[in-house]
Image 1 (cartoon, rainbow, N blue to C red):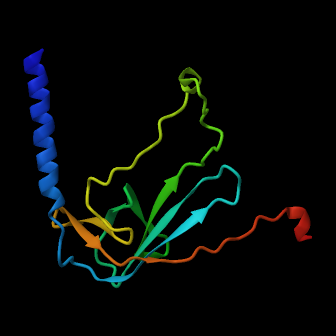
Image 2 (tube, rainbow, N blue to C red; image 1 turned 60 degrees about the horizontal axis):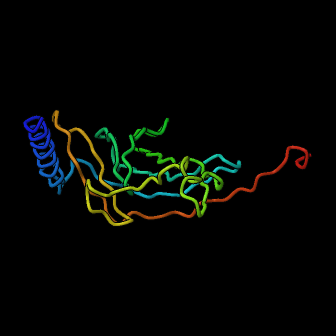
Image 3 (cartoon, rainbow, N blue to C red; image 1 turned 90 degrees about the vertical axis):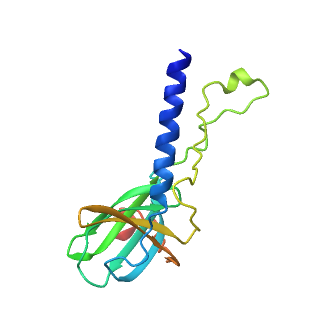
Length: 167
């Protein structure tokens, strides 16, 4: 049993160290030029519909296929906008928050079915709020590029209206 535990710990340490060395391989000169990089928050107009952040990365030339981004503790795939192969969009979704999903009580047994909070740990890269890391493939290798100074665009809140009031 003790040998099995030591073997598992050794595997965890080796995997951790190999992951740490790969995080330092940020490219300084990627094979593409950025036109615009920005993000905007969105909120569903429907109660319980959720919210999120859309990240937009536009290239100057249609040259490379971007794969995914790491932004604010989340990793999401990038998709190409139909009709514009230079524009990539990453959609970070946050589940709808239910204000009544936890019971608070003086008696700890009454809180038994409460869900544990989700805590994001930024272990992949140490990024500021306006930075992300984008992954892409070049010559058969996965490469990483850090984008800084991302611009936050203001969202356009559209009030929900009833179909009856439109007539």
